[in-house]
Length: 142
Image (tube, rainbow, N blue to C red):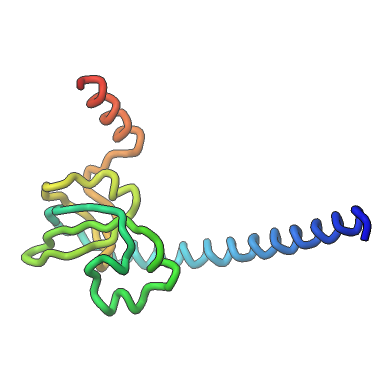
């Protein structure tokens, strides 16, 4: 085989991989939009007391058995933002959106919108830029 033959084979393989990724991305984005619509329909406002927050694997968290069975296998291996909070009279482990996870204060009561055991948003949540400005001002004061 010559160099030109190998280059053509590599180009064809890369093209097939690119087309496959394109269609996979379209499928995944449709599924994500459907899930976001479901979350938006089912969210309810609640007041919770945040005890602890950490990024950890779902398998090591104290999640209900029914929730663990419904999760895909690849999410069980990923580290996810988890929040241990007191909801009413129960202490629960909740999953959280990444942006909300950064903004949640520890050892405080906050008003959040939840869909099942997933924290969707927080009332009065600051943007990433506002959070970084607050961190910079705290460092400059110290």
